[in-house]
Image (cartoon, rainbow, N blue to C red):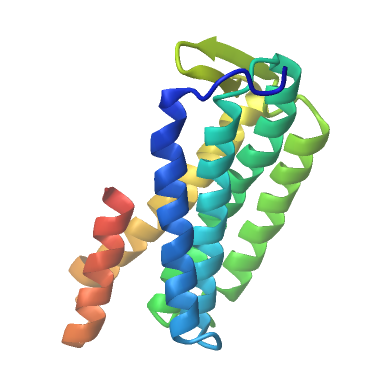
Length: 188
């Protein structure tokens, strides 16, 4: 059967994913035309798809169905990182400076998504744990995709710290609070 019973380990992902989706809609409805609101909404949308999707897959007993769904929902993980970068870029008003970088990140992201959906190079199978199935990304490109995603995050944390500490750029209190929130969000 597709779903035999509800796995209690799926509840946290479900509720966090639902709250994340509601937060994204709330921010987007505040100002539907603002680039930061659109970027944040898209980021939360993919985070929500990932969490809600994994919540669903934890309840599935068939490894073939679990693998097919994990490929879809892991693609959300790959995509959400680049949208997170876009949120930081828009928030810091650095869109012009990082336009080419962001375009290259989107290009690489969609290459990884394509490879994830069409080949076993990123997710080669599923592993059974006590909470349910989980994707096996212990392949060469699976590790490369993780390094790519973590690299994007490290780059922007480094850039923000560079601007704050070494470059000693003068920020308004509002800009400083934005940067502080971004760093807290990334670190936690």
